[in-house]
Image (cartoon, rainbow, N blue to C red):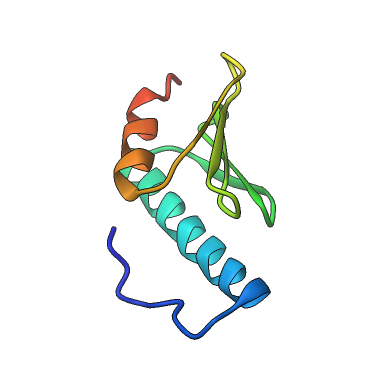
Length: 87
């Protein structure tokens, strides 16, 4: 999930948009690999398998059934979260 593209040279809003787009793409790709449905509820929120909401802009995740929230920072974090999804 390492992305070769770089946000260097981008600042403020442009940098945030770049990070959100890359996180969003990575989450959607992982959802496909795990066989989960991925719905984009808003430009800032993805729902995976009807069980977990990802907020790519700020790197937050919300487990709907347990009402648990947490941060994610790396591709490994996202992978571990996908392993916890109970459909």
